[in-house]
Amino acid sequence: MEKEKSDIKAKILETSERLFARGGFEGVAIDEIAKEADVNKSIIYYYFTNKEDLLVHIIRKHLEEFETVFRNMRIGQAGTVRETLRDIIGQAVDYMSRHVDIIKILLRETLMATPKATIDLVQFIDPLWNLTEADLKAAFPRAGKVAPLDRQIFINLIINFILVLGWFDYKKEADVTRLKNAYIERVTDIAEMLILPPAPRKTEGQR
Image (cartoon, rainbow, N blue to C red; front, top):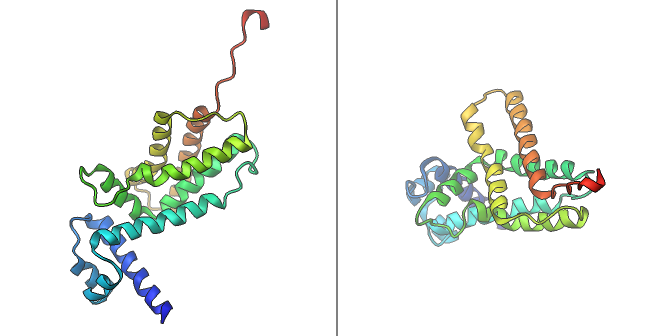
């Protein structure tokens, strides 16, 4: 019985996420979600207070999954700082590639003047960045603290992979994989520059 309830709730969330990504939060009605999920509208209101509550549950689910991915990473065991950064960025890009719908929803929410959820794309990643930055510092003492502006640039670079993927519109999986790997390398170049302080310049007497 509990499993059946859990399955119904998951189906409602999956359907809502797909419809919100396709038509926008404002453009989707509860009636449409009920029809697409093949459930009675009263069932949706049994599990969720309203449409905003549905959106909050969708975002919370992905936050928990995303956090699990990062917490399971062995930061510092990949080798160098660059290899570790590439692994972190790769994990983030992989997650977003598998869950494009939530990124589309958050993009819309971020751009709205009055978002329906109290979280945007940057806030979605920001707490995980804090954890990751602390772990990096512990594993690699030379890693510096990233300035707030640089942090926003870095986060947006990761997010923008979804837009880049749409621009190229590759159909073959091999082409998508090549694009993804190249993108991860480019972002890693920038992340390495932001996180590692520049080597001190030699003075005339040291040359």
